Amino acid sequence: MAEKKKSALPANWLLLGLIASLYVMGFAVYPRLPDMVPSHWNVSGQVDGYMSKTMHVFFMPTVVLGMYLQKSRQNAPDFNRRMNGGLLFFPGYAKI
Image (tube, rainbow, N blue to C red; front, top):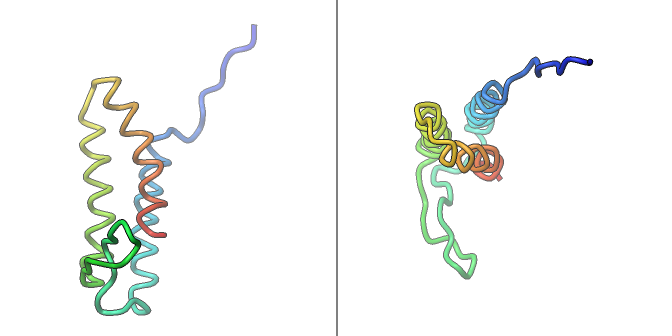
């Protein structure tokens, strides 16, 4: 019988890498960002909220990191399943 080989790169490392990339991308684009960055849009697609570029570069990735740390402390399978999907989606969405 063939043994199943475990992945060399666990999902947690992938998620941590994605979160780290948010910080790296933020530092890379920081000088090119305007002083105030749009942070919220209404249902019509018009910007109705702004935040400073410093808050945007540091706060948004930190929210994702906080979600990951919260997930890593939970043992409930349903919570973990929902959070894994959200964390895989959110890092890409946060920097669009």
